[in-house]
Image (cartoon, rainbow, N blue to C red):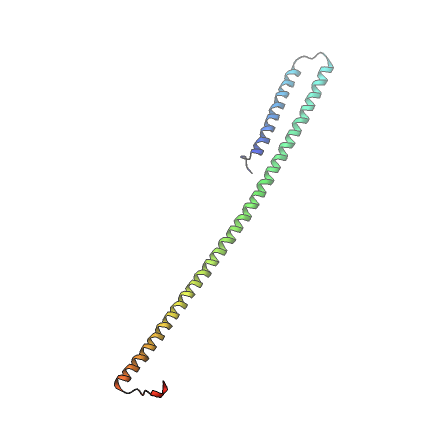
Length: 151
């Protein structure tokens, strides 16, 4: 929550207006006190008004101080929330990095396994082809014993 917060700006505006009003009242009091007063009652009223304005000014300053303390507390809370989000984002980034590494390893393992299976299939096919070729060569040369009763 910064100075751009509408509620904060509104409160500061109210406080500024109230302070301005009190300053105007104090100026009027100074002017009034500078005039020669003939009666004690009039002076007493002015003192009473001055004390009342002083009380109002103190209340305004207390509200302003409370508003500032609240603003600082909200900024601290916001910073804590931002820190928590930063930590969570870092944890998520770490998890993504770890999972990406594991996925790459699994992909590499699958590629190796597929290559091995392909090599085994090729070797098996080559072995069968060689056996058949050897049988054909043996049949052609008459060296293969074929038992007609074995079929």
